[in-house]
Length: 531
Image (cartoon, rainbow, N blue to C red; front, side):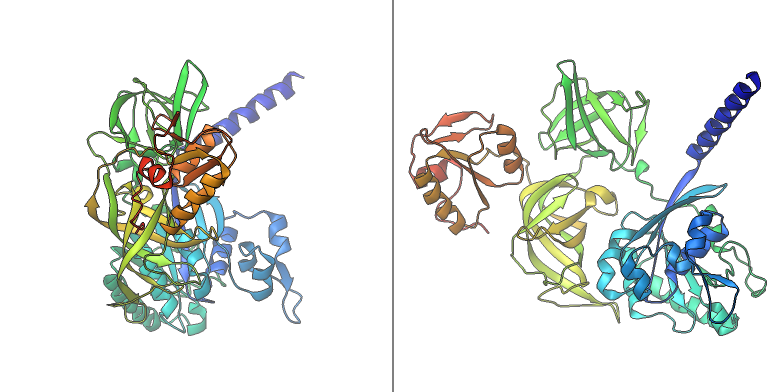
């Protein structure tokens, strides 16, 4: 009995020691990219298999007999291509995320599709990556989709790229072919603005230079792919940026605790640091950094925490907590690089919903400055952006947002555009230039309580003026507040007198109950259509 207890204690100690070691390892996020059939999924499968990060039953499930041979063959691509459609067609459709670790580092891989119609998935997978591996088929060279993915990687601020020249076994491991493609890729990175790249000749199918060096290419003296990934230094970590934390939830279980929960988007925070709550502009100091495992002495991106403040501030979901000394810009007009993700082309002046951090506001694209011709990487004039089109646009929001330039902070410098009718994500953008700064003032809620006839008449006028309107019988103030934050005019059908809601979300009577009087109470110009 004593022996069993000793063995259990020893096993528990070993597990705790292992977990502590894992916790100390650095994490590298990287994505794969490239054209169709360049071997992205095969490369990731080989990387996982040769580094012993695949379970035996998973390997057996993707092992088959090839041709008339009795020798089993592992289909490495199937280790990441898990959808039925992917296995039937032999292509990658959705982004596949895989975690693995070695003695030196932890990794999260985003295996992204190569087909042009799934470019949106590639952009999604690469948006959180520190490094991108762009595969190039040694037989075909750099193709249009290879250029598109390299350009998107540059737009997303990925500072380091690996050019994995794959299928070297099909060109007899030619040093000349590798040298030519390395020169072509160097010219590409210079044009798109990628700061650093490493070219590695590999054969994903045969395993050459994936985890270990290859004897078939003695002329190559650089690291294998895994050796490079284990040792590469990735700069620009968010923990070094100015502190930003979009508030996702206010936690108030009782009258003794009020905390603001969210994921740190950028920077580092410590108890005693001065912060500003935006858009109100009120300041305070951090009292505690609360987590499930206890209070912390400091917290950095991308940790999720709850902050308590020394002073009571009115902060709600969608607000931003930032460093006092380095505040974001308050703007409703900015220029951004955009990737269009929908079959319906971008329409100028059409109303979209812009989601920025945890905040959603109505917005319009005022102008398309240019689009990029992926074949030549030249900019050209354009009246619209089609599916997978890349360009630079000017965006105007109905209410100011709290933004940083994308190069300074990914989380607060990026946004997505949503079609309010279908709720589909139609575009993704990276803020490059603030064109107009604005004063963030709290707007009075546009909530009217009135009888059915008055509500119908007011609704008709508001729709003519191009406002988003919601009719309801719900009298829950929390619902009204949520709709107000989405900049929706709320019309509540009631049997009582005509009333409106003030800035404190208190219901009060209105002096003039006519349509024009209600529009004035809502601070809406009755004769001016909303732009």
